Length: 202
Image 1 (spheres, helix red, strand yellow):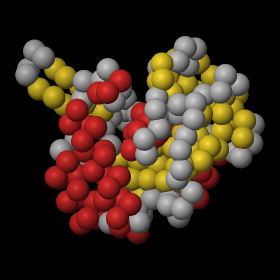
Image 2: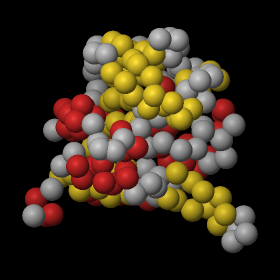
Image 3: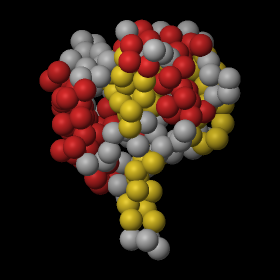
């Protein structure tokens, strides 16, 4: 029954449609498909800080996923409202002990929140590559131009690519996890990604 499913909220990218004078929130349909495959009921969050905060406090979800798309504005992105909303989402999640999982940009948001610097990288767009670390040896997809080579407390590294790019992180005390790959873009969905999310959200 749908009513028995735990709820997971997820963020959306901002698309600027100049011909209509609109800034639209949108997400790949594979994102809610992936969340459902993990066993949760997916609900999108708007890139409006105050409304996102109220939704989180009212719903009290089992977890929140910060999704990909849109570079952070400090690294050339054009969606400051998303930066603001996701920073507040992390504030609220930490205060309410709600688990957070970040994919690609989502991991970058977590890194930036904890003052870890991103750098421009080459060879990480539309490729698959191997990563090594606490998660074992995996082959993952890659769709990013910015990445991190060093983290600060309270974050720790779970996996890195051969060129030193950090591919997965976690908070040492809170239930916060980030990966630079997009689990929703794999077809079929990879069981290891499902286990990672379930292990975090419960």
